Amino acid sequence: MPPSPLRRAWSVVPVRSRVTGVDAETLRRWLADLPPPAGYGVSARPLRYRQAPHLAAFCWYEDRRIELQVPEPFRAWDEKVYVRARRKPGRRLAFQWFSQTIRFRTRREVLRFLYCHEFYHWYLREVRGRKAAAETACDRFALAHFRARNQGVDWTAVLPGYNLPARRRLKPAA
Image (cartoon, rainbow, N blue to C red; front, top):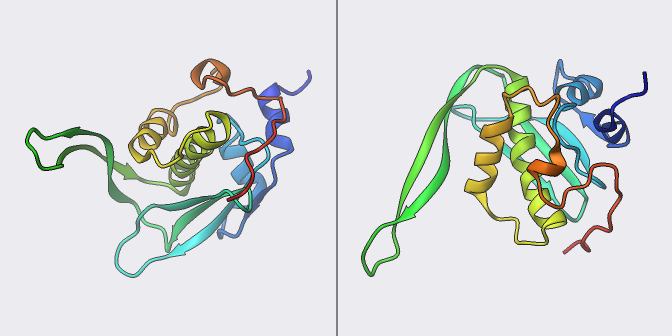
């Protein structure tokens, strides 16, 4: 049986990991049911923290790389994730923020959440041609997909303009 288009697409994405206990193939397997970022690589590295674990990741447009950081030493923790905002009435610019508290129990959950979040930044910039600074939209996408089993998901239907096997011209690095 030939590999699925999603598996073929992930096979050409360069994946690196410097996280203890998570090699590149394990990371690729954990991300296999999520949409791959065409033309970009994915790397994971440890995040040293001082007081409490937290989320940290970057989408490096110049280097064409999505970098995920896993807190080390790892322990389960709760993180407040902001999903939307509503402007408060009045002349002053002020917002009411809405959030969900998420419990991150494993390295896999952290890596998948961070990947979904940074992938959506990539999608907004490279596919939609928009500014990629939509934090609450990225968090909503990550919340919807990081714990779900996405085996049968048609990403071209979920993400307008995203074409899985096609190689596209990327925007020039800033």
